[in-house]
Image 1 (cartoon, chains in turn yellow, brown):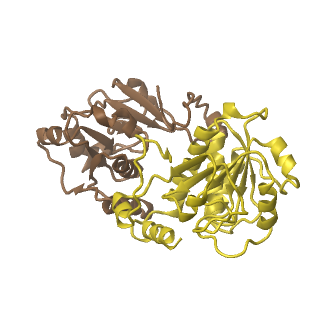
Image 2 (image 1 turned 90 degrees about the vertical axis):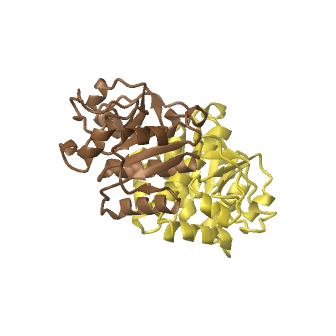
Image 3 (image 1 turned 120 degrees about the vertical axis):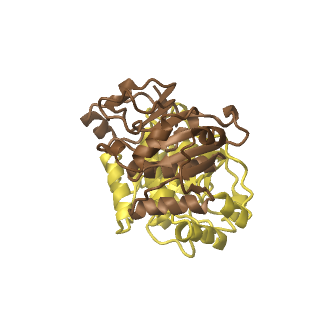
Length: 226
Length: 197
């Protein structure tokens, strides 16, 4: 976890990347990976409906960017974003989604079965690699419901609620994981069908410094299936 | 910015090293060139940047830092000896002037740069508008790019484009903007961010 945070810090302070830049590239990777694993034509619901659950931090921001690109790629995303930071970045991302007619649910579906009926996929953008400690409401109940959902779940960077290094045996078991920048230790415990790498912005020097040993991305693709 | 490398897939380049010269002007078009150079580096090209007049905009200054930290060299001058450019690079990305330029062609250092670019023999990829062209009427005596990447939507002068490939990179335009300006964009394949016209 510390290494992931150190890499992020270097990208921002040494390389002068803005959070906006990296979040946009990360969110785009997520949408691209999802499109490869679950193309719109593969959905059994009448529309390729996707529920994107966004948490209170940067992982939620990644989710908002992802939702916007999913709309561009032909999906019908719906967002649930209960705790919104008071920062221009997140307000901007929210506006962009709203202006693209992406609905924001006023409340979380009460039953897992309702989610299964309405959506063909859930994107878990609740907690990322900075997550530590106890899960605060409303996310505890949300994760509880998501664990009972039968449609596939795609988690951004870390399955929410997992310890970033050790995983969580009784936690969320997503079908897809999109590791951003590099897989975190928790990814070793991932047992779903699809593991993608995204966030193709790591300079070669950083990759070497932290011995990330990332496999090469194909051509100009922004994702790589691991 | 992410679309330029698609015009020249790596294996097809004539020189042994995948070198590309990215010429960046003083305003937004130049900044887009900086972002393009960074992605070219990630895609394993060897970009070199010529950025004689740097914008004071903090965002663009950060783009410069990102390129520098990724070991992308910045030339201190552009050779006027055209053969040197032809020999050293496989292609030139023209990010000098965009649609917002007003008689930018006449001002230094753009005028000298464009004069040189008119005589090079390696392919030029122009970002949005071939630099020096009038954004509506085009130019009969200006540079002749091999590839044009129209940003958001083609500009009027694109009608006069005679090169090999014309790409549009405008997938991220919201639908209401597209409709409002009657852009009628083509279908983008899959998750691609560019489409060849």
